[in-house]
Image (cartoon, rainbow, N blue to C red; front, side, top):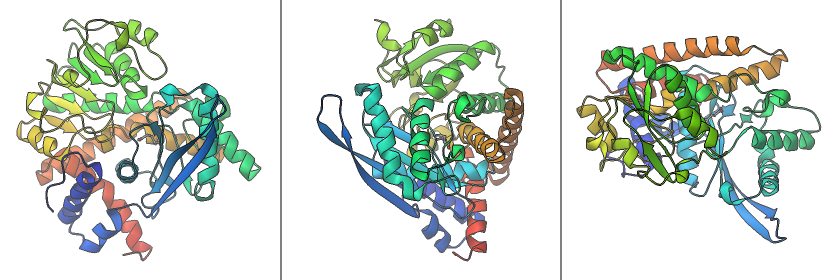
Length: 416
Ligand code: GLU
């Protein structure tokens, strides 16, 4: 397939899916089925703002493929949300579910908005309005939302409440990432970062790198980035760089992570309290051993891929590295652990949450962590082994594993 356009996340992911299916020997029709979501709903949500005016927000919900089971994936609130992005994000969720072997397909939602500029009550109205707009196509056995960029357990709680009101019964399995008192799971909030931490540890072992004192730079200080900084710091690694939407901080002797976490606001902003700071893309090029992009798409591109000093990159964000940059990093022998594996800890514990909701019996944090550890280590090992055996990079190996179950399920259902 021809080279994808540099910053187009949908065509980039389609290119890798094409290559993965090709390597596995599947015919073209399988690619035709998987290259786009089966369904995409676009909604317009009128919201009464605090000043009395009405604003109409655009939202999406994409359902990539439900051959394996109900679709599953987060909802992001961000000004840059587009239809194409939501489609790509839903495909990545299918791949994650395949990689960590969950009985789900991929889904994703998004609303074009800037929650940093909205009040608490406006956010509540928007969250409820979104659920009313998509309620026909979601549900605990249809499509299960969760948090993503700039959404959190409070937003999940409003969405759950709205859904339960519409259906007229309590339905905790409709959404994951809920507060514990509403049926959330222990360990869900930190799950993405836990999964990333496990991938970092396993990647370091493969590279013969000692994690003690290893220098780590993290771009993004939201849910994934902030928990990860804490886990890295507590495990003896040195967090030398962190970045948020407004800038980055760097200290070769290691940053005071506990202090930064203490001063961070709910959107993960902290760097604007400091005068001396780098830009949030400069943090990608600092001297470090391990780099973790944990923010948004298209951060590592052909412009900066050859300036990266890290020997290991672990993608906590969805789609942070372009197709071209992946090739450059590969040639430079940098070990890149792809998003669809590294960030799958979140949806794994979301699955545990849904299982607990369905059975009405709740697990301890230790139980959740033990299961997550096992899933992540096995998934990492499978992908690493395949990448070595087939002499392909870890992204392509991850896609090969990610599409396989979906292709088989689609075949059994008679879709292909
Ligand atoms: N939004 C997260 C992701 O991109 C989690 C999705 C979920 O828990 O369903 O993987």
